[in-house]
Length: 502
Image (cartoon, rainbow, N blue to C red; front, side, top):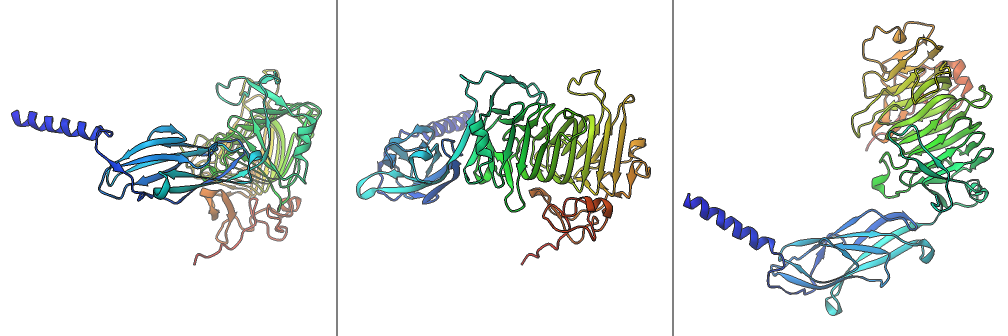
């Protein structure tokens, strides 16, 4: 027992001696510090938007405990901020560092582009005089047009029904001057949206080719009744829509913004050659257009990737789609609820989500009433999906759900469908030619890289020359504008020969 007490007492003394960091004798730094890097690159940021936090490790290579007299930013009014060994600030004195030990300095920046050139630089300066050492800080800053909710002026509110337990948001309706920015081809500045921004009834928002639109956290674009969204991208000058964090580590992070919301009664929405990435919902498309026959949304040559909820959530809508690719999503890539009318040709729905447990099949189609849909409104469904892939990393990638009172018309023709489960439900009778024609069941796609949402198919794909020629003639060029009329492949892409690794 005495030995145990002696051992515990020694442990307590040792722990106390090591925990008292400042209770040791030190000598001034001799200017021989070493660093994990000589330059910290803080990647690209937008003007006035904070960067990510970057780390610099400072080493004391000697055996002596030292005192660093000062650690400062080089500029007097720097746009950078530091945290040295747990203390925030821009200037620090008498920093103690044990022999053969190290400390972390964390760096952030919020830079005003209007005051600086696109390349903003500073340095972290250690000590002074003949013992001075420094580490360079470099950030590339992009200027942008910022469109945001002004809490004092914008008093209208909106509640996104599709987000669980969503709070009411204030909404800013775009002015005519702001609308013009989106269609100004000569102005190459990015557009950054803060909060919920809307297009008022009767107006049209046209997005010019090559535009880059970025959403801040919890932001969305809302198209109101009798308003229209037109995106005029091209193959070489695609429109890109994503979050406002430009650092490489954010390039594949879902859920950075909320949605493009085409509300009930919005009309003639047309999206062409557009890439939508890293939102919660890529597109939410609500009820039938005013006349009930014209599509609410025509979407062609479009890519929708990395959404934390759905790629497209279609709520009793009317959508036509060609050369549409919807990739990795935590729920469904395409979810159709409350019925509606849908015509899809040469699409690739491929969900290989790996960020967490997937919650749904790649394609969900239903005419059951959800989202408090009005009881007196029918949920009739008419859906045709041709020459398309419904694929992913689960056993059942097609889910159908019908009510017994409303129409449930569905047709899949020359589609590749992943469905390895067994089911006695007649909805999944793939031999029923009233609903399934020339189906490729559980074929191998041979995608280039599912983890990076690169769903072009290779020469070993089972999809090759399995599409219907008549429907292919409706969409004669694939998403990369390769002719598919002579030997059409299933999906949005004609196959290629993958490059060999050297």
